[in-house]
Length: 220
Length: 225
Image 1 (cartoon, each protein chain N blue to C red):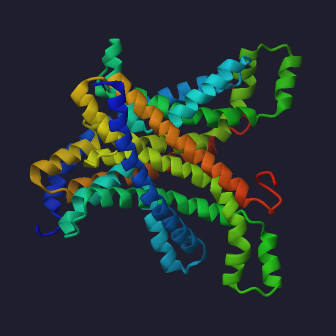
Image 2: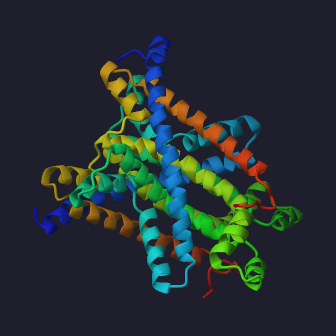
Image 3: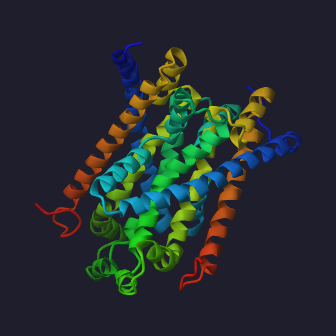
């Protein structure tokens, strides 16, 4: 097979990978915020549920979670297609790691900010929404950027439940053409490029969000 | 639809098979960690070396290894290495992939650990006419190791949790055995759930172990000789 053909097949796979990332990333962010905030502010019994979710998804392998959702849930009458299983498993997995990012960033906002907002008679919702979160958000960007890259890498696992992502296409092409060197070389470079793009984007985001806060990136 | 019930008899029947596969998982993790620590240390020292091209080169190699999926790296080693005349067993391939992948992560931990040692220690060693090697071995590393333990431990646990990916190159570790049992009996609930619980147990025990190691580690360093 010619090199150009190989690349074009692999690019189709890359598009599937990007789609999965685009769907799983918002899910992960949502889970991270919901459970991160529950972990910090909710009453004890609800907090326990959050801890259970976080410990379970951080304590076991992403691949086991993926298999569990894909192979075991149908026995409970919940039949989901491979794509949904992949997105849900990755979103929940990365989201569990994200809760710690949210929690750490919120806790790193200086205590004086809480005290000042109490002194100014803000309600607790106003305090979190207008004072704490805007400052915490900037602290979350770099670790979230790392998690996004982890997500891109983790999407390769969905190839094992028959989704035609980049890794799946590579494996199929390699079995068919035996041009393994070129194929896996190109695949590694494609993943690397995706990760670099994400990393540049998050660096830009950090700079953009830290404007006016007098720290973080350079104010322009 | 198949009736959902947790079948204890089936669970007990297949548990020994999964536990014997756990040995392979643990072996891969153990060998992988030893290799990762060695690779990490070499990378960390190279990034502190004198030559700028080497520093920059090593940085990008590490960046590349860290931002590409372990699964693809495993495939790469397993399918491409034989082209160069190097054929390795699935276990050896897996250990090599885990070791290099996590070595790239650990090198950052080691680098920041080494840089965390007070600069005065380097100056004092220079004043005492110690060679660079002696300074690393007798002065810097003994002090740098304790603060590195928690992060190193976390990466080793993370590595342990990635071992199921070795099933993709036919290594019979826990998840692969569970999958085979599941497809033979068409019961996935018990094997997959048990593997998940075993991972959870191993991770918790390992995290406790690492905490103990850190707690007992002498604060003032130790003598490597």
